Length: 183
Length: 121
Image (cartoon, rainbow over all chains, first blue to last red; front, side, top):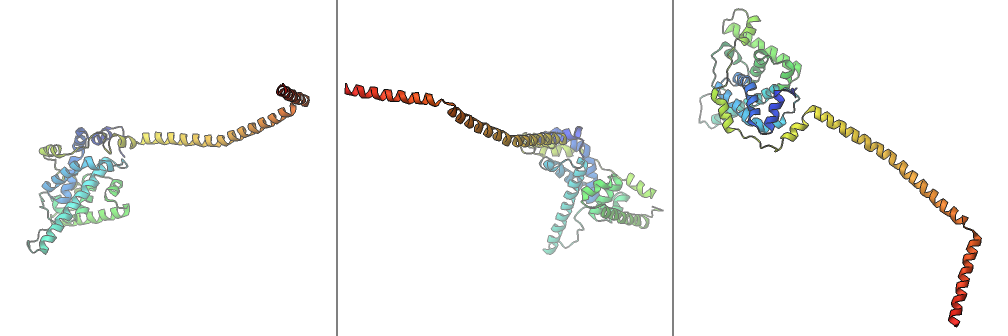
């Protein structure tokens, strides 16, 4: 829920009134978390920044869809998550089209430039984009299960089993590939 | 398990490039004040104000209900008083002295005789 008397409410109202300071407050508060979520989904800093830019450019138009039933951060995570998945889908379709036209025969993976400098990045890369997002938000950002249900639109049981499978896969990877002693 | 959690805690966290906000600031199209979803929408999205508006609406409906409940009674009272007035009128008619009416008739006859006399003259 939105704190209707706090700076969050004020900034939402300012944004609805077309005032830049409202958008700036939201950017300062949430851009880093959104950037890291996008980075874990897209595995590319450049693309993650593109999505953050898109989110904040579209925010003045889509803020009317925000009803205040969830926290603004939760809603922004959902918006960013959907934008990232759309981007991946578009890249996949583009690659498929190129493949069908036989113009680009070299496989291009998911269409993202993978930056796997850290161990976690490599471990998360074994998961699909949605599961990466889910695991990062739970373990990396500490988002509660209730909010994850809102972001992913999934029931608690499904989320728990997805998280459990994802943890197992990451641990398995860490034990095998990274010679992690005991995870 | 501890190391697994540590891995997430120690994970690289990116910060947005310094120029990212400037790019957004330069490109963003903000709605003009008073357009759809402006102050009015924000006003109605405040739960306190929504509750207040609901209370006002409920009181209004209650008042209308009470008014409608009392109105037929008023009509009935009006009808009853109208009937009573009619009855009183008829009673008043009955109260007129028949002798007075006879006298009034005599006056008419006298008038007629006077008219006839004038015609003869």
